[in-house]
Amino acid sequence: MRYLRLIGVQLRISAASGMAYRSDFLLEGFGTIAWMFMTLLPLMVLFDGVEQLEGWDRGSALIVMAYFMGVRAVLVGLVSPSLTELTERIRTGAFDYVLLKPVDAQALISASRFEPWKFLELVGALVLVVYAFYSKGTVPGGGDVVLGAVLFVVGVVAMYALWIACAASAFWVVRLDNLQYLLSAIFDTARWPVQVFQGVWRAVFTFVIPVAVMTTYPAMALLGRLDAQTALATVGGSLALLVVSRIIWQIAIRNYTSASS
Amino acid sequence: MIRVQDLAKHFKVHKRPPGLVSAMRSLVRRTYETVKAVDGVSFTIERGERVGFLGPNGAGKTTTLKVLSGLLHPSTGTVDVEGFTPHKRETRFLEAITLVMGQKSQLIWDLPPAETYAMNRAIFDVPVAKFDQTLDELTQLLDLGPLLQKPTRQLSLGERMKCELAAALLHGPTTLFLDEPTIGLDVAMQVAVRDFVRDYNQRHESTVLLTSHYMDDVVELCPRIIVIDHGRIIHDGDLRGLIKQMDPDKRVSFTTTDTEPDFSKLGTVMKRDGQRFTLRVAEAEIPAVVGQLLGPLKVVDLAIEDPPLEDVLRDMFGKAKPP
Image (tube, rainbow over all chains, first blue to last red; front, side, top):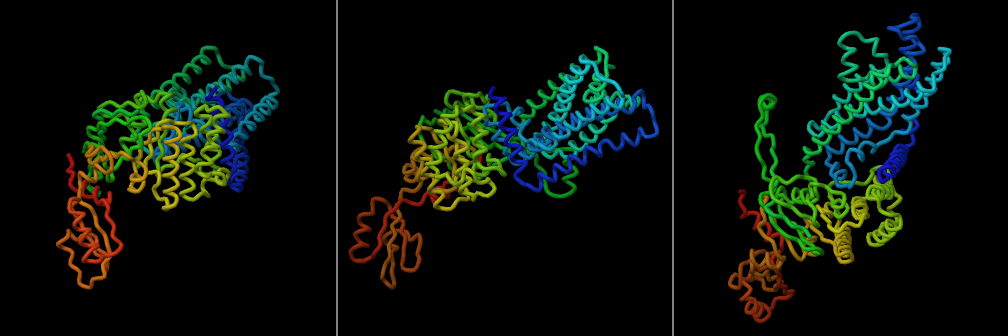
């Protein structure tokens, strides 16, 4: 209960922080809307002269893109700003105040910054799903919608776990902008169905940095194309990532030496 | 109650000489040295005590406070704060203590302090009625009224420190670790913070362990002081005891009208500023010296004082050798 109330207060305060500078806030909103349209551009160009790509037609690929936008909304709206805040607090020593609080430090830091405009992409993702099914001329089954929604959460968890593991390394290396850029660049590949990638890259994006878990498999679930075994493996893989990231975090916390006064 | 027994905290620090070659060499092979920030410290502080923690920069004061508040694991030794082992960071322990760091802030920069307070209320799960009552009390004691709704970035340093103190105390801690709470503040604000800490300590019978570079903070607030240097305690007791132990002589200051004064027979002349003199005189000789000064020598504005704490400490730190 304490955590739920805390997350509520954090979201409210972060939203208020975001609105502290009016022009920044409005520019942010404009940027988010522009970004949503730009995201779709490569896909539109690609499918302009092609009917199918590795078994994906335009409408189905749009569903992957919708999942990408959805997971990205949580990434850029909540996870990334919070973890950037974490690295800043470690560098300045203000992380001391996080450890002095009687709540889990990971939980406290994970929702410490929230950028409200970015969540507009979640709405954009939903609109895109509706449009994709409309253009395909089909309607998803009830079970597929439930599984698709569950796997969306699973995908978000996998993304969060990867980022928290990366952010935890800030306790050792302090500045990890480059690592964050690399991770963001890899995450960008999640906008394409994993089948588009061949050989070793497909294996990397499925098992090593599982962007397939974040977008392709949830999209296949919504399209009614995911078998039960892969669905279970997706859930298991994501939870395993979460556990590993939690262990890395706990080791990192033990290594925290605090910046000097 | 705080009980510390043989506490040591050692850090492994990477060390390399300046220059490009040594920088490249350090990429391959690193040399480390162990820094003994705290090296075998023991003390006990009873509930309700106000204790000043003194020492030069790098003496180990802040490291000790961080171990006591659970931020750092001790290398060796045992620490007990209100019946808890700090580095385990149990919920009830963190609810019982607070750490105020004068050089770090927990206030949300772009928002008014009231928002940080709301966040801390949620974090510490303080009931609304209790929160309102505590905030009212702190607002009154620290005169926070006009500051609560102003964005933190628009507050002066002194105003911000008052708001920091309130943020640190809203959950009603019984042990206060204050690390340089008056740093950078003007004299009036230092006095205000000092008065507040004393008042809070007396109202709540809370334990206060304070570090400060301003001797006045310690003199005014702390009946007991612990002096630490090179990670070791070199004095633990009351202020007068320390001064007496280190420099038992008194300082006798006065102004003379004599145009060619010579006071060297009465004591050591420590300072001369125009016609104003300060002599160092053994305590036993004070009556005779004062008799002379007020009698035949006809001086005015005579004052007899203990040596300034700054001088005593400077002398002390100069003598202490690293282990």
